[in-house]
Image (cartoon, rainbow, N blue to C red; front, side, top):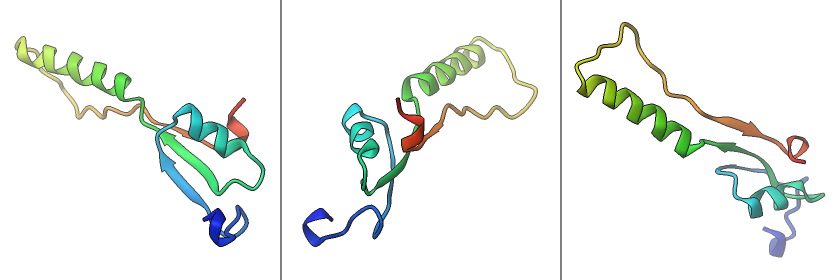
Length: 79
């Protein structure tokens, strides 16, 4: 995008993931990266495994369980 002269005012990218490199790029003035969503895969995996162990052991659940470990990040959220 930069090679084509597209700057943060001309284009915006929102991503999934929050690698340190991505977060550093997102903080830069004029960055085309405007936000990201961190899905916290390890947190989701722990919740899913806990539920699997419960069900495998004969346990039950009385309601729908929504496994959700997401965090929206914008440049102003990054220290």
